[in-house]
Length: 109
Length: 112
Image 1 (tube, each protein chain N blue to C red):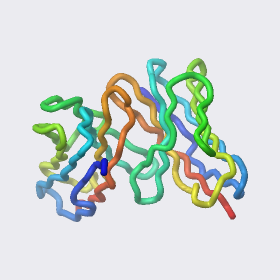
Image 2 (image 1 turned 90 degrees about the horizontal axis):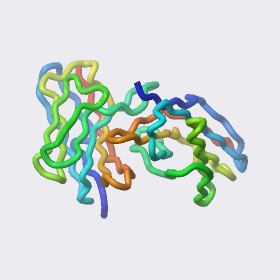
Image 3 (image 1 turned 60 degrees about the vertical axis):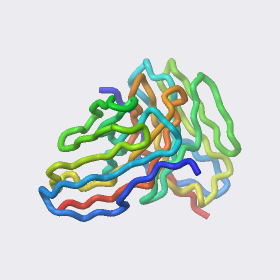
Image 4 (image 1 turned 135 degrees about the vertical axis):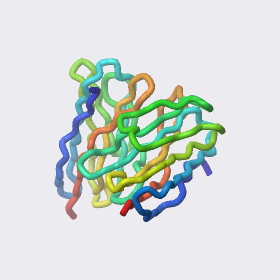
């Protein structure tokens, strides 16, 4: 069974801090990696994707991928209360996309 | 506007009464899929389709049917719904090469 694992949280950080979200995956053949944000009762919204080892930055968000360790992370700098949501890690293999159960992030003012 | 449209958004039904949840996308994507989301279990794939007339089972296909007669539409059919199919359902589509997936707004289904 190909698994994607995330800490369920909740992860609580103060406003302005860095939030660090982690994800591990079991399928070494995985080729692309995604982070989605999901507000309660809403659909997942893509915020970052990464295909190659290393870091990818987009505004306050940085995705980090280490294929050797089968590890992908998301850093949110200068966290805002509006970042409070569940963050889903998704991993794509050949034909399917698998999701972790999500990490709930709370940013406290 | 590029979007994935699901209908209905909310549905309450009774055990055994057949229902269909529609999904349509206007981005000409080849790949479409259905997920269900339950607390603590995340998103689990029910069925997916690589293109017209090509469908395959995901992780939790039991009790569901799909069809892909047109590229833009991918309906989810519950022939005989049961209470364990009470869940939040999402349709999604993506271009096969880019793998970036777009989700519909979701359908909250309750089976009594």
